[in-house]
Length: 378
Image 1 (cartoon, one colour):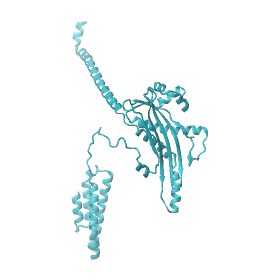
Image 2 (cartoon, helix red, strand yellow):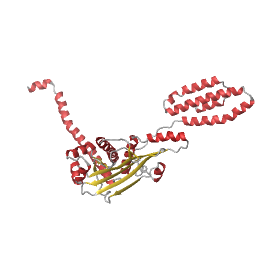
Image 3 (cartoon, helix red, strand yellow):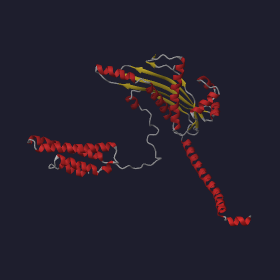
Image 4 (cartoon, helix red, strand yellow):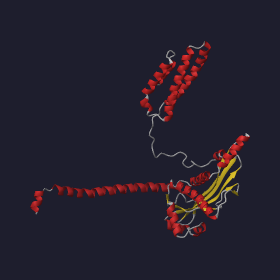
């Protein structure tokens, strides 16, 4: 089809209508191939035919124009030809190649972490500090329960450290529980995709409520060993939402979220992992015109919606768990347990099949006995 288009483009004797009809025939000829193209490739093909038709029409007018007009049109010919080649290259469809599973992921340990360059570009002066126990790789926790987190703020919507919305005590309690649960779900979700077994959050809440643990002080009064016995977990995770505040300066708006997470062993109560993360989700608009300053000041204020705070809280939990190294021992145990379970399943299926075969043969033999033989027995 590309060759036919090129011949059509370089033929100056054809009229505009002849070129259009030929282009239409080429399009219908390639209708079957177009079904396998993507939407973008299809649009590029339509644009190519449009350029061909416009070029044919301009060439036809050039033949009857003045010599100076023909010279200008001839100078435009290479540009149009180059554009045509670019569009034809875009129409080339690539064949899908099946990629293998279970290869090594790239930047698995660092993907999602913020580097100094990320913080510079995003205007995020925050930081992350963590500490890991020396015996983490030799004795990693296998089953983890994430406990309810504490809110060290006031449950108040603050802008530049001033309360923006008046909330009563009940509303503060509900919003405090909302903010801490966002961070808690983020930490739980990040751990669940790793080499750990996670106790479901509804199960954790039900067990704690059944034992009368309804606030942070009562939770801290229970030893980790006792919590591990209640929840059947090797480790428990404590969390504190230190702050969640908004800052606004006309062209600059930011949410600042700080959190601390601790993982404690339920075997002997020692701290396995701890991390404190400070994050700024900043929106900066650099404008100089007075009208642009007024418009962008309003847009910056709109950025201080609750959805931006929720996203920042989720990102804080995700970045904290990224600091927890991969427990290679857990991966080996999970893979071995999965293979052993598969072998047991295959073995039980084989035994069940072997037991069903004699029963099936007895039923078939009973059905094959003739009524005459049955009468003789009677």
